[in-house]
Image 1 (cartoon, rainbow, N blue to C red):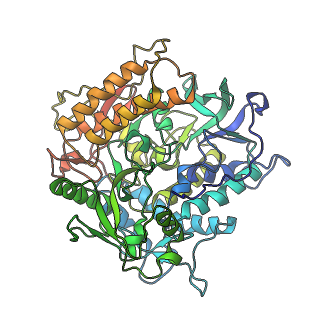
Image 2: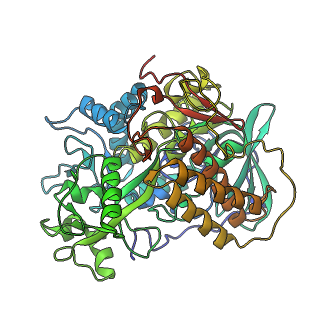
Length: 575
């Protein structure tokens, strides 16, 4: 299926370990919207050594080509209040809080909606071209969970590709080093500070890349699941490295499933943008009947679809876009993709089923992107800022990367060193009880390990395994046991499989990228299953069939740190 970015842009020769520029001021891991938003504000043009963006020597390390990140696959757009009498930042804030189901940090969301419009205009000034009406005004779309149209898009449903293009161009002009097809193995920690990463270079050699500041912008964890919209690179690398280094991680039970992924053998699953429903596309069951509000938040729609799939005993439902006017001009990328597999959206209903899409939790940060480990920062999908809570509002992800990538850069420039008790970081700095149930009964019998951090059984043994088959086994177990709807039995079954995979993988330092990605998936899967087992309620993207109600006592964050699991004191939206 044709996807944005199928043709690789020209790029210079890949650097080798011998061409590293020495210790960097900042090393950015990942080349999506968050990492590159930080890079272009921090980096110096190599030919001048000075820049109004900060004057720092910045390197970008990415395991694929610079242009190939999850950002590129983002279809829907960027949600921001850019004008119009019907909208306001207060409405955007209210919609985000409603989608987050009681776990958003209000201060973080206020920053997102207030600073977002400026960042969008800044990106436009950088060269990004968004869709406009004939008169020149931006063409705004409405998506699920939004009370009004506020989503800017490019090429109908190729927004991420346009955002990435603008940022990649700017990065190539400013970064001191661009390390493409390198793979970060683990964080380097010396004297209680992060000082870079140990990595495999493009030739497979182990290299220490040192920096005064290291930024995790490695994206999500969609490859944990057999059915996902995420590209092959989304293997939870940053999350796993943080867990192994004992850096606090929270809210990892909240994996959002996108309801309208095309049911098709292609993987990652082609995404049928939320904007289709915003323009009037309908979701129908196997009998052709509507059964859900198409513009409800994604978790609501996905749960309703999961229930209908189960009750009707079918593998997919339908998205009916036959009533949409000007489909080809509004959504040219989607139309071309559908035509490539023989579907005509003007005539055919489109087969759909939920697919793993976005991790709402991640490495805990304050409102400036600082983690609990000095020298380590995080932004984008790998981070838990408090913005998304239990479920991300549609099209807030690109905005989050733009806003918090820029804030992180500002904090580094002014010399911040050590997190503040703001945003999701309050759950760490304010502490909480050890273990599971917030009522005080911690004997919940969790049998999975907490992310594998600090394991006593670490050895140098390398066990020969079939990586591809082992990854497939892990992904199927996670999709079946920890998918849209879970229960204690399904989670325990998945945990048993992941435990056996962990034993097979061993705990040695990986010698190649494939084994490294598998090890990262195991570490992240263990953490997700632990949190999902502990959270005995249904909230946002975490749905428990055996605990179908939302419980006020669970308005808390589950935090993994140093191989332990803690439950924070009650989440408070503002200090």
